[in-house]
Length: 124
Image (cartoon, rainbow, N blue to C red):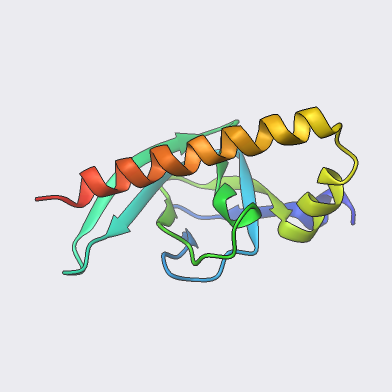
């Protein structure tokens, strides 16, 4: 695939990732800003944080088959680079085994921190 096939653009207010949807890719924000939101069981939305250029969103989709845990919405016009699960898996096959293990540890810690943050944000 060419680099242009990985580029995605979103206008301010557009939803990039929807909580509950299946996750097939992650994104690197080239420019723009997004907000990360989650809904509690009553349907109330809480902002978990924001991300800007040089950060990744939706990365959990690359390591698990669970539905999206949050909604990500563009706060301003954004240009993103998409990383599909299949491309990530193919690239991972070429990584040194020690780096692969280190990455798994970091991703596991990310999942744990994300879960704690989500739980604390949804409590009244």
